[in-house]
Each structure stands twice: as structure tokens, then as C-alpha cells.
Image 1 (cartoon, helix red, strand yellow):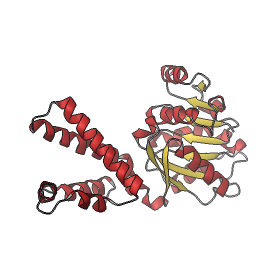
Image 2 (spheres, helix red, strand yellow; image 1 turned 180 degrees about the vertical axis):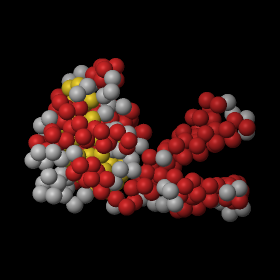
Image 3 (cartoon, one colour; image 1 turned 120 degrees about the horizontal axis):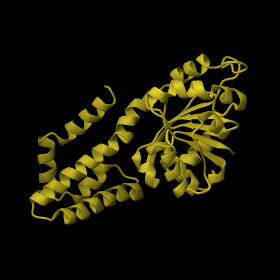
Image 4 (cartoon, helix red, strand yellow; image 1 turned 90 degrees about the horizontal axis):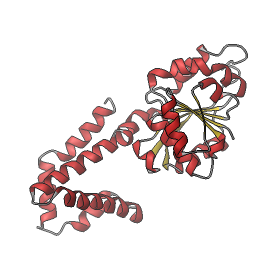
Length: 273
């Protein structure tokens, strides 16, 4: 199975490295492009067996899967460049370009479908994925939406691929913007909580490196409990809250200061709501 990854920047490079370390796609079956040779050389140093090229069309030629790991404003130009190869090999297209809908992708493909490539008669299967930066360590919650032309076998393949890079979560396309706010943007919000907690611990008298170690492990432990027990946060919170104790006093003070509201308002703002 030949896979082309168009764009070996932070996200595309992480996808390539993660897939190469997995069991589904061999490094030798991947061809990756980038804007500069320096970027490709760094990737090649990490994954010696991978194929690299500066030529997007060469990478897409004959591919069964084409991953567009590019910025949204580059989608139209890149598709225009590789459209003849897409027409010839009819690959599964996976777009990592945030905010570019299936309708927009279809329009761009139609506009560039010269020769035998005709979306009216020969629809390309389209997939949208939104990882976050934890994909670099194979811990990303990757959101996936499928259009109606993706087969069940292709759906399973895509989910299996991204499960090797963390956890794949299938959602409706209409929820992509909201999901992006929760996961892709959300990792920054998680870091913001960790930063604030470290600052608070320092104010309480701990050295920064000690504070960071405590908070990091506290957050890891909290996530671990939710995953192992299959519970929601409230259930675990109440296990810690002794009546009249310091935990509930701290939680109530955070709520009074607007913690819950700030998180919800931030997510809604990021989702454009």
C-alpha cells in the first residue's frame, strides 16, 4: 500500500514518524514531501527507509492513500498541482487541513479535475482528520470524519492507522469545528491549567522543578483513573472531597473565581460559537 504524505511539517512529519513506527504502513511504502530539502533530511535521518521528494506530483503518483498535511490556504494550489495523479490512481484522500469541509474539498477537486477525472461520475473517497500536537509522541486524540464515498474497509484502515498514533474518534463533520476546539486547541488549555497549578505551587513554597513534577504526575494520575475506571470526573472528584474538607473548599473557590465558566467560554469561543 503506497502512502503519500504531502507536507512534512510538524504535523505531517509526526504522522510519518508515527506510522513508520507502527505495523500498518511500512516506511518504504511512504513518500513524503516538504517545502525544503532540510526538512526532508531531518525526517530521513529519523526514518532512514522512508522516501522523500520535493515534487508533490511525484509523491502522489500511484498512491492508494494521499494525506494532505498542509495549511488550509495551501489546499487549492496543492490539489491543483497533483490533480492529474489523483485522477489516475483514484486514492483515498485524507485531509489534515483544519476548516476545509468536504464540500470545499469536492469543489476544489472538481475545479481541477482535467481529463478523465470527473467527480460527478468518479467520486474520490474523502476523510478529514484533526490530530493535536501529541501525535508527535503517538498520544493524539485524532478526530475523524468520513464522507459517504468511503468504504467500510477504508474506514477501518484509517481508524487503525490513527489508533497507532493515539486514539481515533469518529465524529460527524458538523462537529469538526467544536471538536477542534476541544482537542486540537484543547491541549493548549490543558497546558494553561498545568502552568497555573505550577505557579500556585511555587507561591506555596515549592521550587519550580518540584512543582512541575507534582502537577505532571497529578494530571497523569487523574487521566489514568478516568481511563481505568471508565468514570466521569464528578465521580472521581467526590471520592476526594471529605465533607467540610480542604478539597471542596478549594473547588468551590475556583468555581467562584470563574474556573468552570472560563473553560466553557474559551472552548465556545475557539469553536466560533
